[in-house]
Length: 254
Image (cartoon, rainbow, N blue to C red; front, side, top):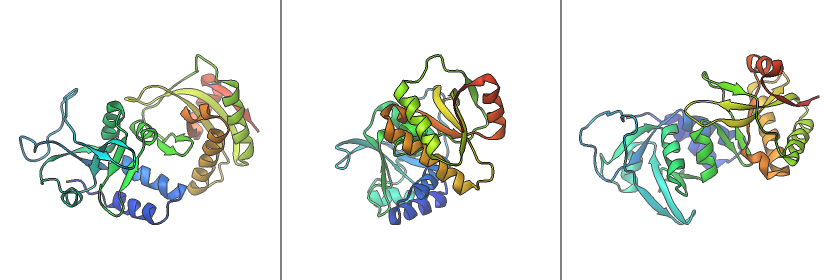
């Protein structure tokens, strides 16, 4: 069975003190986890059983008062399932991102983690969609995490003027943002997405970089709803060189 101590601790921290930084740590822990998902019946054989490509899996959804709809129930441990009241053995272990992708495709009202526990949490559709892409949700958008397999391209259509203005205003308001580019990001198996790469002050530590990115995403999303569908990524040196060399549309330079 998966060990989700990091995720369980992140859930406890957010339950006690829900800050943007703590929530970002929680999402990172989720994406690194293997989660347990309920099934109507126990698997035919005990032990690990990898799913075949395109294999259909019937999962259990439950009614939830908070979302007024059906949510997919997932758990961090067998103990959490037993506390929920499900018979032992009626579950599958799956990588979290795969589960989020299934939930996003099924159109459920959300995903509830460790239903019935003091630290349980509910992820809404926008959070689930972002996590399915391997990104970190924020209240007004999402932050793209670094990945080993990335394809970039120049957008074929320009952004709406109000979105461009909102992104530029957000970048101008963040004193550590030096430049930004718009490009199409493809991180298989997710669909291509429009992303804004932000060049930040290289002297910033990791916490300060994360805070600066959250500030840009929040400011842009507050100014223009259309900015909330964009991804945002901190541009490391390799990506910055690729984009600055003509692989993207420059949006901003301080």
